[in-house]
Amino acid sequence: MAPPLFFLPRCDEPLSRGLLQARGLHKLLADARLDYDMTLLNVSKIGPGGLPGKILSVQTADGRVPDLLGYYPEQQEWQPVGHGDQVWIGFDRERPPTPADLVRREVIRGHAIAISDKHSVEVPVIRREDGSTHLPQKYMKGPEGWRQEVRAEWKPLWEATGPIVDYLFDQVGELSVAAACEFAVRVLSVNYRFDAELQNRLEWLGSDVLVKILAAACDIPLVAAFDNVPSDLVDESAKKKAS
Image (cartoon, rainbow, N blue to C red; front, side):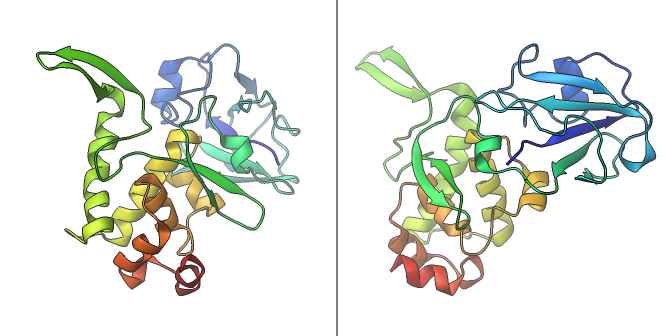
């Protein structure tokens, strides 16, 4: 296993949060420390796509860096993000990233969900039917005494989970495959340096996993969740295993 590398074409800037934001990496790498976890390397000649630029290496939460620290096209697989003018993502061909390579420095507790025969992810409990959560909260004192509220930075995700909870518990509203996938990626990004681009390459989400992640985020027993979702969201073999 080895963490990914990021190639920044035609980059002549020093490493900064502004650079990460300009290249669309600021959310993915939000937990990585700029001066401690990240290294920006010059590519001696040309990099992926025949372009000049720099390679960004980000060490894992437990302090590991890629064995192949640089551009080695014979041993790495590089793919562009979009048109490839801002970022390329590189993997070691023999050791693609695993959840252990992408886990964030701090993890919100939840449920372990297997994404393959060898690997599982920790899916945080975002919102239960009663509104309770494992997301960070603050304490506020009002006329009726002290109360808990989800912190402002986490409130949008908590609110976005409400319709998912309603659907999985009571089949209220609708849930498309696209909406389910968008939500699942968002949930996984809480504990992992993971987004839709990495999903396209690592394929963590499949019909055998998607509903499990939704259920775990809402702290719903799998049997109940599988009973309520439409057939296009779930693999029948996964449904049988949950029953």
